[in-house]
Amino acid sequence: MNKHRFAVEFSISMIGYMVILIASVLVLNAEMVEGNWKTIVALTPMVPGFAVAFSVMRQVRISDELQRRIQLEALSLAFGGTALVTFSYGFLETVGYPKLSMFFVWPIMAVFWIVGGLISGRRFR
Figure 1 (cartoon, one colour):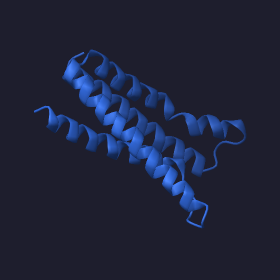
Figure 2: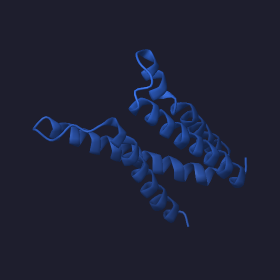
Figure 3: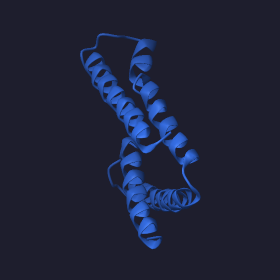
Figure 4: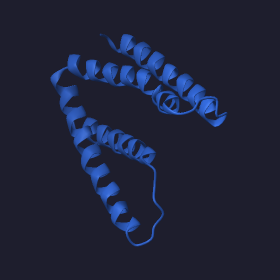
């Protein structure tokens, strides 16, 4: 898979994710479903979410060794940084800080992944 094909596949998956996310939020906020259907509707954005994850995994799998190393280092920073931030905040919650949703974890990890990619990519230029 070349970079153009990855960009197309990733973009289509992300657009699908956003469309289904908006639709599911609208359905849930309008209280159009009840019972177990709420759970199903709430999880429907994860179908294209899996497509996003698989397209990223395929791209990493076909990357050359240098790109794999850059991504490994970036993900290592993302993993460690996210663990430190989320555990630190978890301890702060025990002393009265407001509870945060799990929705905060991915943006934190994404920021660390981007920073890690920039740092690691710069080292190998």
